[in-house]
Length: 433
Image 1 (tube, rainbow, N blue to C red):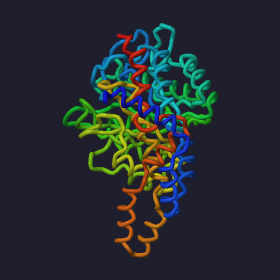
Image 2: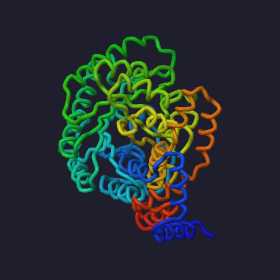
Image 3: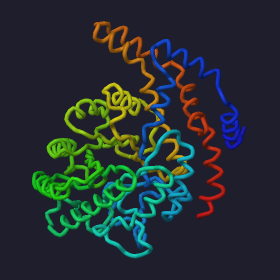
Image 4: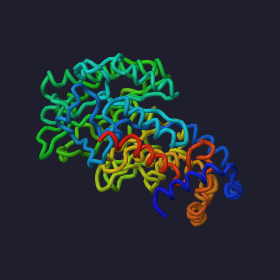
């Protein structure tokens, strides 16, 4: 059987199944362990996942004139798969296709470099709500909220690898103005759409053998104090750390310790990106240890391979562990779920769908855990019983519950979504080249 035939077969099968005896059996099996699958599905579909725009165009942005990045600053989408979006209309159309294949509630995340200015050159420190009205009107029509990120990279004003922490006053002030402008854009989005998470990540760092580590961090504190001097209604401000980046291997100004302490001391939130830490470091463990002290946690669900390579998120051990800990810590409904990957070597719409469906699967997986029994065993001193419960969980009929979630969300289960991805590729994206 050819691949397209397989995908069409899967799509037709998903549409034809109004109810499923397999799900009925799975529901009973989970119920015997005290888990309500119907309630888990309802909650899993209701939690919004903020999907990032930059997967659709390889982090090029929409600045006029639309040029290649001057200095990526650790941001790199590799590959040259045909059909990338070339403007805002194409990017929005592509995501609409992806959204129709992803179960559950969604948000959409933008960077400052995705401004739409009608061809007019607008510097990043001059961005304003008027440059994002088309995005807001589109999101409002779709029932989605928008999230926002200042774009402190890929620009001539990134000098010596530094932005907000630069020792050059003009550089530092340029990026302060950009961040302030970005927060005003976030306030506009929040006023129209309910709320907006404004996430700040900067690429600042050094390539080798850094002589002065304190100076940039002291300047960054001063700059951030200016940026966050004023609280904005319905804007959730968070800060994102990173272990290292391309050409920034020796020193990152905005380290995990730096941002954790700054966020806690200033009443801000923190972003944990699954690829921004040492490969053996547990991001899951950070949730309970941080949530006691920090109000908001943004989770950037990505997939590192040996480093922060931002591969498409998969339903793997690290993602499941993060979702498990969010549920066990009692903050499944409090953290902000989002995606952050960019792979230009495969179909970009499929990447959106596969990665975001993986996050939704992980959320559902965590909600289906017979956790109470494991906790009872742990506090009862029965470590063997705890392990036995966790081992049994791995063979519970999760797939049947996931298929039911897709049916309730009216999106294809199994591989059926790939039929629509291939149709859109043939009819739309391949014609762009």
